[in-house]
Length: 230
Image 1: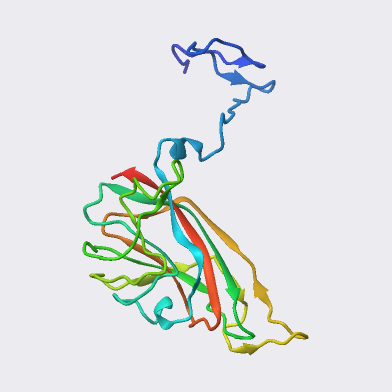
Image 2: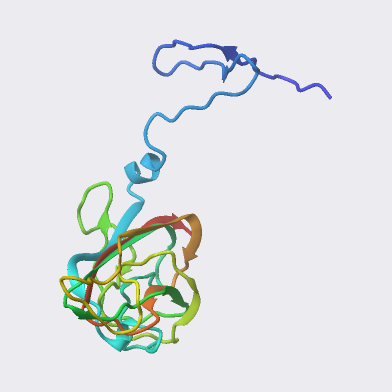
């Protein structure tokens, strides 16, 4: 079947004045050539839709409330975001990072870490404004950064959903005493790329929790999300 009104693709570089329409560009094998004017995530960032939450200061995570043992309103996400029920956007998760440091010779790791979620939550009272990746101001987002703060007002308990690729700190979840001659084996900072494959709808909470209670551990980390109309 022949395509009607098809526009031929030009081979090789093309030059045109601003605003002028030009043909698509093809390679010597007839392959379509596509180039990015800016970085892959530039468009959403420039349009003011991309935000970041997390722990910007080294924060102790040495309590059972940072673990899957506490899934109610007293839970404290290591990393977390809440999309209020009145929100008009979905939080489309792009990326998360975590780095944990051992703060004493006797320490216990908290990993593996898991992502937990809950829906139908409209009355959380804590949290802070995420930072805009465009303006660097803590403004413009409909979400709340719940990292390192209790989920006070949570209506429905969190549910452990799936394991996380994030880590950091001690690689052992048993107590270990380090010495100058035998330091603990440690995990470095990690990045988990979702690339839009995880959405937090209005009323939803997403939280990263440890599976064992960390001892002598502090962490920093982030969650990057886009805000897309529902």
